[in-house]
Length: 218
Image 1 (cartoon, helix red, strand yellow):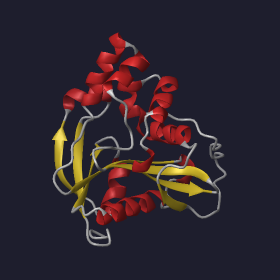
Image 2 (spheres, one colour):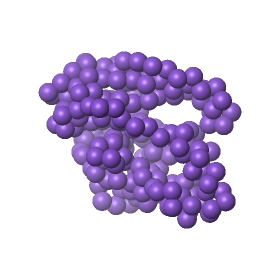
Image 3 (tube, one colour):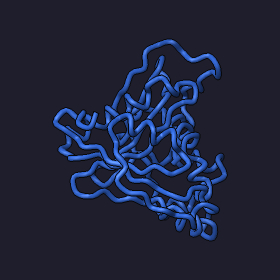
């Protein structure tokens, strides 16, 4: 997991009025920017395993699978992305060996144990979706919805029956977005033992059926 790209960060308080476009795959050279967005969205959750940020962001950037991303672009800049797992690969990668090389064997082993807490495996017919990361200046402008619908189209093309994702209890804004886009909560796992360690105490699994055009569930 890691980030720095030639794209300049959005200027706070001065969002562009251009049109957001969605494309599949991560643009060449945008790895750093993608990792920065990912860390901004999930750093609080992943921090205990990958901190400090100046080490975590380059690590994420170096281990991205660009073909497992759906990206939002504004004026040529990467402003949002969502990842998904297909064919055994997800947006973020990094083997156990890569973690140990980046963080050292002593501290790396502890981090590997924490990272195993985030591992998820899809069921039959499920496309597993990573969370959505959107530039703070572009939130509440429909970027997340655009990314979800593109992932849904991919799921339909690949013959999946449903999309699955997990959302933690400290991210109600994300859950509200998923519900608006047709996801339904099917199970909540209470994890009070993780609250002090990782900052959240429950994980909710949500699913959305996939039709031929990817839009079933809306």
